[in-house]
Image (cartoon, rainbow, N blue to C red; front, top):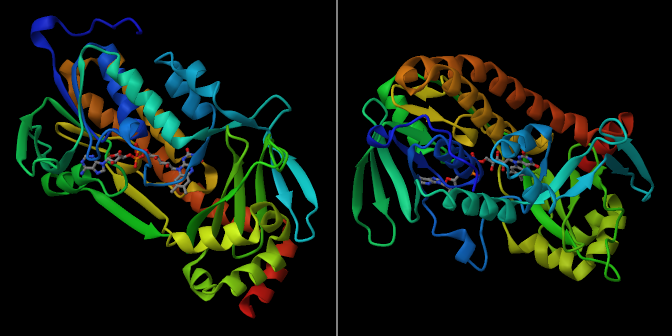
Length: 391
Ligand code: FAD
């Protein structure tokens, strides 16, 4: 366990209620714990480490330097990156199956493909190592008072209401944040949410002859104009593919034959690796999910701060949602460490002042990058768009 930073005396421990034990909630809990606060991490779901299947978003995700920095400061970078697969380039696939590699940076620079569940579990383990962190699963935030620090939870196993008081409510409860919702009642907050035209659905390319079916050190992209397929490598030699497409297109592909014809025309190399039968089975096994972009300003209340998707949900086209969420924590603690909890009002003000413009900027860039990725082959993408209209 990392050594504790002694900023709190034993008698005067501030109570920190971190709401949401997803990626950023666990990381934030570790940061508060290192500074010897009395931390409770409340999570709506039961413990994912004990679940067979975790239902939720993308299976794997791209981690960049921004996210790694957040882990480095709790000495968890090595444990996590050692399970990641380096991706040095974007590998573009054209309709004939030709591949072109576009580097992310210098030859040594890469992003990592990491399994979301593994990352969340590891961060839960990290948080649990601190004696001053308590984990409370099956606790769903119903509402809170961001002026007083009072929170009301529903214990989802017993149905009972649980009321607690805290010195700081840390909202890490994702895009549809109940903490953020409560903040709206307590102070004026500028807020916007937009659904992207693209929905997404996940598919899988299995290993081939015991190894990766495609070159593994790349993020594969099949840019096709109004839609695209991407694939990130997994530790088990498979690739998780994500098909991004307007919902009307998903709806049009409403029979096995149509799905196969569509893949035959646009993603034939991927289909050959997925297998026609598996493709159809996976395609129809889930409804495509929407993608939301959320901005709010400020990211704090009197006794409340928002981190991650609760503050700024970012569409995944820059692969920055989690990375930016981790950076929220880094930035917040740089400010807290320099000013101290006695000046929490000023800390929170400064945090929002610093973070909101950056969060808004990355939200915008991510939306714009959808076009960049879909049309990566420039004019070729636009030609395909015309064909798609007639599909
Ligand atoms: P979440 O991960 O959503 O965690 C929120 C937690 O709060 C959950 O555990 C939830 O159960 C809990 N919760 C919710 N409501 C309550 C409540 N009322 N009370 C208590 N607990 C509650 N980002 C990247 O950086 N790189 C990528 O490659 C990437 N790929 C993505 C691909 C897709 C398809 C999508 C949709 C997103 C992707 N992202 C990526 C974004 C990334 O998933 C999010 O930014 C990240 O998960 C945010 O973490 P979080 O902890 O804020 O929210």
